[in-house]
Image (cartoon, rainbow, N blue to C red; front, side, top):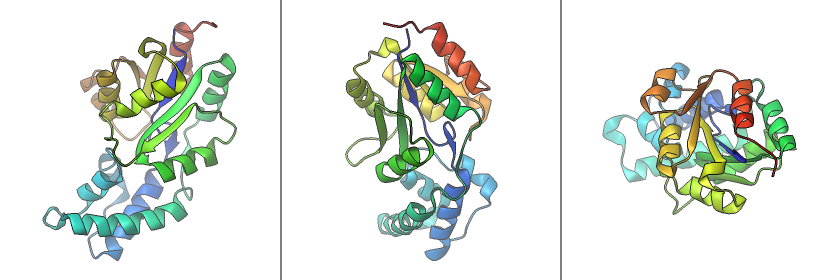
Length: 222
């Protein structure tokens, strides 16, 4: 049975792309680099903020000192503007409410840095009692390394067989595969459905209701 649902954040629970793109463009321009069309950002995000900015910077400028400078500007701006245009995907708040009412534990596993992850999750889902809200932390490798999932399993007391991981990208599906837990790929996020297929999503869904049905089909009260 499934008693723990671990959600990716960006592109799964929340549509954060405009705030991420606006913040990245602000940092790039402030540091003298060209900016990007917003339509390109769904393919630049993933693997954490550092990798987002590395992909956005011109290839011949990606020194460690340069990326440190751009990241500092990005974080200062994003910390103030990360809730300007971000919105929950339709049906996700209701899904979380329903899962909690069913007795299913819920958690967040994100490659966004911890400070922003906690702030955004608490802002948009203030009434949800998450067993863990895990963002990127120093010394912990980013997804698809499964360390973040193992930490959530430890905090929740759940086993791999009781857990399902929900995300919108190949990084998420690979994270679940490496952690040896079932996965649900969602098609409303930042990446195309083909990426989910190519990275061996166990399930692919087109609506939050389908997530509920999958979890319910494995769920029974203790």
